[in-house]
Image (cartoon, rainbow, N blue to C red; front, side, top):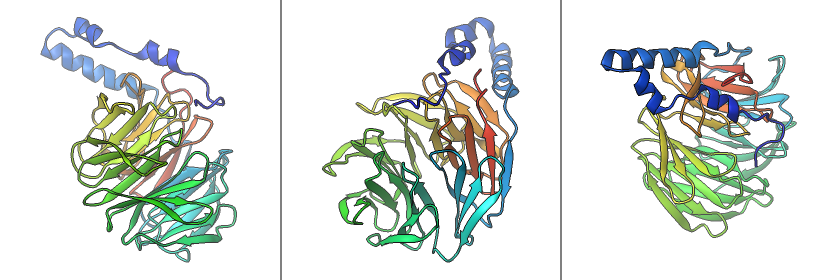
Amino acid sequence: MPNPLCEPRAASFERRAWTERSSWLVARGSQLLLSFALAAAALAGADAPEPALTLAGHLSLIGGLAFTPDGKTLISAGSYVDAALCFWDAQSGELKQCHRGEKGSVSCLALSPDGKTLAVGGGDTSLRLLDAASGKVLRAIAGHKGGVNSVAFSRNGRLLASACDGDEAVKLWNVASGEALHTMTIRWGAHSVAFSPDGALLAGGGRFGRLALWNVATGGHSASLLNGKGKIAVAFSPTGGMLAASSDAPTVQLFATKGGRLLRTLPQCAPNSPLAFSPDGALLATGGPEGAVKLWNPQTGHLAATLKAHEGAVSALAFATDCKTLASGSEDRTINLWNVSNVGK
């Protein structure tokens, strides 16, 4: 369901959208077509916002980002040598607390929908549930045989999914008990997981171009989609009708969840780009070349804005529930907070 806190933007995107037919009417001949493409790119970035805040303090790339439900706190994970979980005031940028090293390896994170429980995966096979307020470890979950690359909560917060390289497994866990409910396999390693908004499907992306859907209730295989090559990142749209996937190719593909039909391909994205839909579904954020963040209208495939974000590749993205605030994390060890409320308007 679209977030009622977010203002609709459909009309504004329709005003900006240029159809393929109109582009050919303007661009007659190869030189004019090139000029038109350059003008479109300039327009997409003309009103791109500057970062409202830049947060620094991590010692290595940002492995994950999550806003609390009220949007007041941003939680970030620093990977590798950092192994840090940091809690930031999303309005002032103040570092409220940081747990560095003592909680074990950190490679990914997810916050439960009620904002009370933080799931943290590590490169040392660890999977832990923490109290989001205090950082106290509530439960250590054992079962994977390699580094945990991705974690995700179901919308009701009762289930947790995790993806692992070393054992080629995607696992479904009962959050309350820590019990493993189902184990699915992605050959050659699992890279990412995402629940559909209704909780019925789980998407898993692998390391060699494999993209699978499973039935959450049974763990049974639902569909397979081949998406290029390399590591696959996945994200469902808020309505659940669309599944976004990135890979080693410099594109992001959008599939219809029902039937798996390829709807459109977004060009000029960074390989292995992180993905984030705004809660109202009006924007899809992806990584772009040279540390940029690209904002797309997923319904039309039109580029709404390019944010000149970071000096390194974008490694994590997250929207706040107000649909106006976007956080981007990077290999340059910084986090930028953006006000994107006017993008596409």
